[in-house]
Length: 217
Image (tube, rainbow, N blue to C red; front, side, top):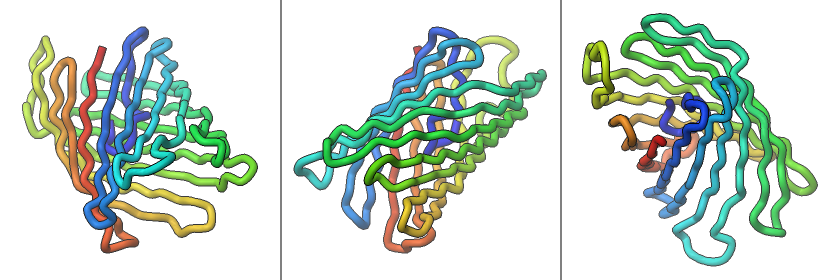
């Protein structure tokens, strides 16, 4: 899956993934910690939950808004070398403060995995209610397996991937923020460690570092 997006990950029926991601902005000196959970309802249905917490700057209202997404796989075609799949996303955003309002969200996610590379594309639109403005995001992620070059015929081996992404973030009343992300993913059977640098293309002064750990059950 992509480094900046959590919705493309396949989840086994009854299986779960817990992810912890830290996003630190060097220039703005802000630090956000995101806790996320994914659960597989069926081979075609999954649930995704996320809750951000602001670590820096400190102060009141550090807890962000709770996000819930349902993914339904509309199309999937598997072959010996990979898979293609398309999924619908739908859900809501619930504020953790009475000073903010809720939102509905919908979008899609597409994945193409073939041999040593994977491409994930997702887009999500959030319709704000009351005083909450609309917003949206997109992620285009390309991952390439550096090691091993050839997977074993059976069993699960440790794998190392490069990750390169183009990310976009839009908020009503503001211009779209375009971002470039480059990083690495180290995957083992039960957990994954991944990280990378995020460069704001619209704001030269903004550079982020993201570090993520996820556990598969």
